[in-house]
Image (cartoon, rainbow, N blue to C red):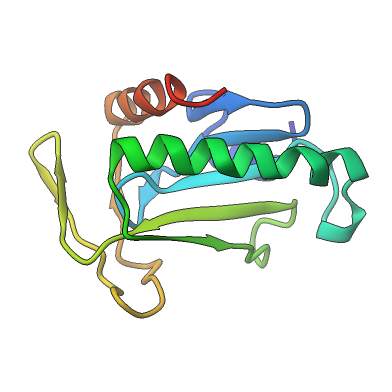
Length: 142
């Protein structure tokens, strides 16, 4: 796997694996259910992905939205392709909501609602929490 995938905690953060994509729990939860959709390729430009990755991506996104809808009940969803620090093709998938969500006794507000997400306002998950989210979401993916 590429260094970007490893930085986001793979394999511990793995929710689902597809032919060209991985869905990972984002260790720093900007909002509850924050994920990373990462290309398995070593490509550092979106346009450099193989055509099959683009074809598969639509189904992966539909799976993500269904799973997050069940888990967190988002109002909107943001897909951010930043690739400034982590160079390989990936998206930060952020469920957005007007009212805070509570999970495992912790409150997860959407600090930026209704504007852009505040990436610096995140809650870091411990290993057990990452595993629990991964397991819950994984049941609704693929």
